[in-house]
Image 1 (cartoon, rainbow, N blue to C red):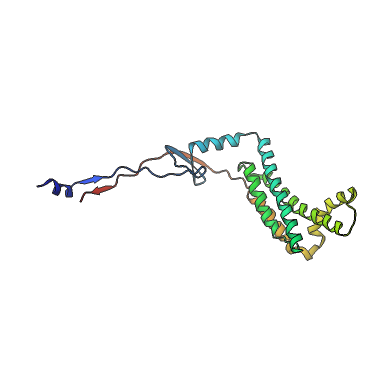
Image 2 (cartoon, rainbow, N blue to C red):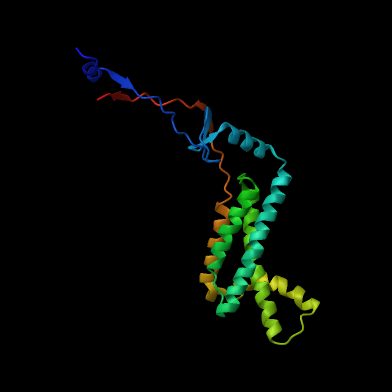
Length: 214
C-alpha cells in the first residue's frame, strides 16, 4: 500500500488553539487565570486593582465622586439654561439627562462603590444642578426687567431656585414627575452591588481538532 493511500487512513490533529477569554474590565485576553464577578470575567490584574480601590480611603473616594458629579452637574445647569434661552421655554426632560450624567459621574468617582451615601450625593447634585439652571433663569429674568442684581437679590434667588419646581403646584405635576425620574436615574446608578467573586479559574486550551490529509 502506498504512502499516499495511508494518509487517507491516518487522522492528524491541528495545533491546539488557546481558549479566547477576555477580561471585561480591560478588554485584554486572559493569559493564565481569571475570576468571575457578577457573571463578568476579570483578569487577575484587574481583580487586584479592584480590591485596592475598595480598600482605598473612603474620604478620597467621596471627594472624587463629589468632584466628578459636581462637574457634570454644572455642565447640566449651563445646558438647561442655554436651551431655555434659545427656545424660550423650559424643558424638564433635560433633568433626566442630568440625573443620568451625574449618576454615572458619581459612580465613576466612587469607583463603583455604591451605597446610600453615594446615592444621596448623586440625588443632591442632580437637584442642585436643576436648581442651578433655575437660578440662572431667575437672574436672567431680573436682569431683563432692568433690576440691579444687588447682593440681597442674588441671595434671595438661591432658595427661590430650589423652590421653583413646586411653586406652580398641581399645574407643574408633569414637570415634578420628570424631575423625580431624573433623581431616580442618579439614585439607581449608585446602587450598591455586592457581587460574589469566584475563582481563580485557569485558562485551558481548546481540544485538538482532527484534520485529515487529502
